[in-house]
Image 1 (tube, one colour):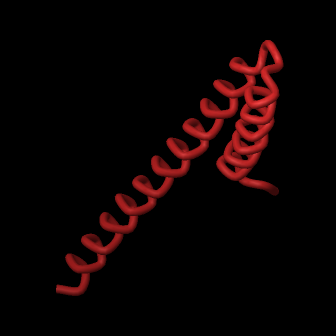
Image 2 (tube, rainbow, N blue to C red):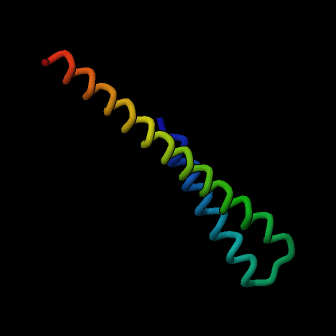
Length: 71
């Protein structure tokens, strides 16, 4: 299964590039596409950072539990 963060980031990059191409060609209605792309990129990275932070926190708790058991 493809992770959500990967899907958000890839679709955000694609929409961002499409929006930039439309902006360069001065096609009306390109700003919402560009903003949706940026929004998806931000959402993808926020979810990824939250997952990384949560995993670090869980690993730190597991390490402290094992230290208490060992002593």
